[in-house]
Length: 273
View 1 (tube, rainbow, N blue to C red):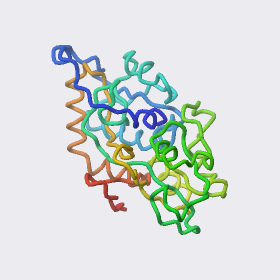
View 2: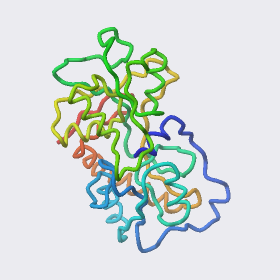
View 3: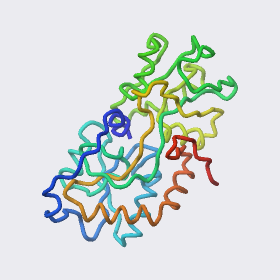
């Protein structure tokens, strides 16, 4: 999901081209062909262990299609090399309204979080809070919390983790979580689904709090949808139908993976069991 982290700061809703209404869908009629990263938990992997894998399985069942994947590292050029080359037909998770795809209705709302050790009893959700002055921060390069760190002159006390990596080799977000646990970093600023998954999966002694943007110009919460080619209008409608009918099941999958959710007023949604 490094692609989603990068897109989050620049998502813009664009209408499908007018010609899309008259062009036939390019999607397979026998398979749900999913574009995905083979080594990128909690989102997806080749063993089908990610929450996007589980959502893809649900969609395939609902549409009565065989599920298949085109595997490609989730980095720069992912959409161009997969979806836009007609090697697959849907990206299960992307920022709603992102400009390089046409997106479905969103199926969850989440944001960036402040990750701290439970034992430190840090209760703030603002990087500018005087109570955490002098603490060491962790940040994925070029993600939206960078704006906060720069605005509050915290770069000299921040460890930077690379955004675009080969996920077969490096997992910078997981590395940041590990550094918080081990005390190398005091406050991790991390995408909620990653923070929630590793905290739950590894039973880590961490506190997760949605990060306060502190400034109306800083966007830290995003709606997540499925992405298709702009011309595939009918297919997008079918996916919207699945999302509408099976939202409760999708939400349960997200809960199972520890994904923290926000409501439409940006309030944390209590997790169901």
